[in-house]
Image (cartoon, rainbow, N blue to C red):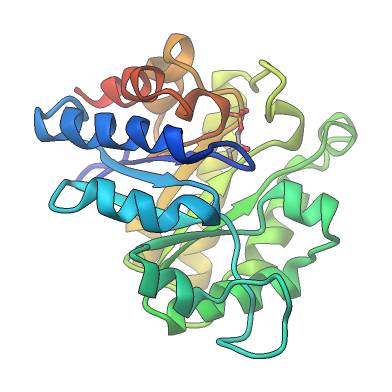
Length: 252
Ligand code: 13P
């Protein structure tokens, strides 16, 4: 945790969820209404098909919505893509960019991720910029270098604590049940914090740095209590409101 910074617990539903799953978002809204999120801000990033229904489900409630990706352009002939402006229009406050599943599965590099983050800022969204090393890179002792390079290359111009969140997600920890040691997470977050200071000055001290990768109720308190860890980006355990709330309960 960083003093005076409101933590963010964000759920990335990935390619999961049919209409019926909107009830989970309604349950979250009700739980947040009862204060079950403690000090944490709660955001949910459902698949694009559910954003409109989710926006209705959270109306008047205290949770935010996010998209999982956006195009770098505001509009145009890009079949199948969604712009940051569209996400904003649909009720989103956030958009995830540069998730490792996009970097690996869609060949997105830092320049494209930066362009997407830039589009997010232009549309008035907060960009959740994802970074993280592979197992091979960690084993080779390259984790810090890789992640620093991704932060440098993906951070949009004009980044501030208000419009950018960094999510450190080691690729090998995503969906595997594995997590780095608490010391390794703290060291990486410290390194990102120092780099943000170099890149965006005082804003870097207040920019939220989330940890993601196999966060679940059983490990949330330890991971989310570490210095410079300002919340979590949660995949699998965000699909059920009860599990997701049990993670956010680390901030109660
Ligand atoms: P899991 O929580 O399922 O490991 O996924 C993490 C993630 O990729 C969130 O963006």
